[in-house]
Image (tube, rainbow, N blue to C red; front, side):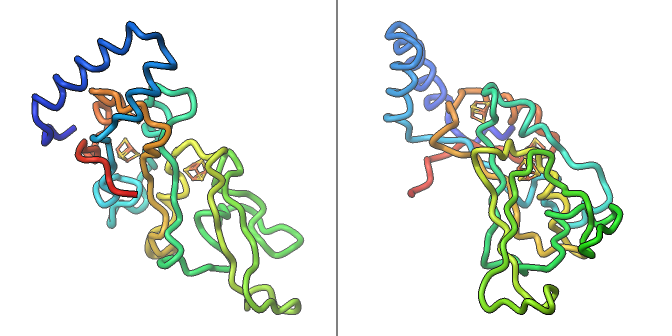
Amino acid sequence: MSDKYSRRDVLATAARGAALAGLGGVAGLLVIKANKTYAWSIDAGACVNSKLGAVGVEYCELCATDCVLTLSAIRAVNEFSKCGRCYICPAYFKITSAVGPDGLPSEKVCPRDAIKREAIGWIDPDDPANNFYEYTIDEKLCNGCGRCVMECKEPAGLGSIRLEVRHNVCLDCNRCSIASACPEDAYDRGPLPAT
Ligand code: SF4
Ligand code: SF4
Ligand code: SF4
């Protein structure tokens, strides 16, 4: 974890959290969110799952397992402007799995079936490989495990999927437990990005 935010920010947030603890759990958290000006974020270029050159290594799933929330505040995001809308997306299909009767790999990468695949635009019914496919992440299901991010990288993918902190869910812990565990120092805390 980087320590780029000031000690005063940390102490101010801690003091506010301590005061709000007296107000009671949920109500207190809602006030913290309403007043939130600082937030944790992930440097996608530093995360091992999206880092160029980190091919053939095991994905890191600490973003899914180390959040204090039961369903982590981290989600995968597919940046459509970078996505190739491939017929066989390596982040959607486990490309090493056996080919099924439909000519497609029989297994998927996502263990939570959170990625939806849909043909878009003009559709050629006789040649599915000639169509474009949109891959969207269902944020109710995704837990930020990073598997799809790791697979969507060159040479097989285009690097269009990354992990992001969902600021409407994140509790903005003073010491984010994922940031403390992150082996790549990919977490930082700074001013809340404008929406
Ligand atoms: S803990 Fe760090 S390296 Fe691991 S998935 Fe999260 S951001 Fe990436
Ligand atoms: S990060 Fe994990 S849970 Fe989320 S869409 Fe990718 S593979 Fe599925
Ligand atoms: S700050 Fe807390 S709630 Fe937010 S991602 Fe980190 S551990 Fe999860």
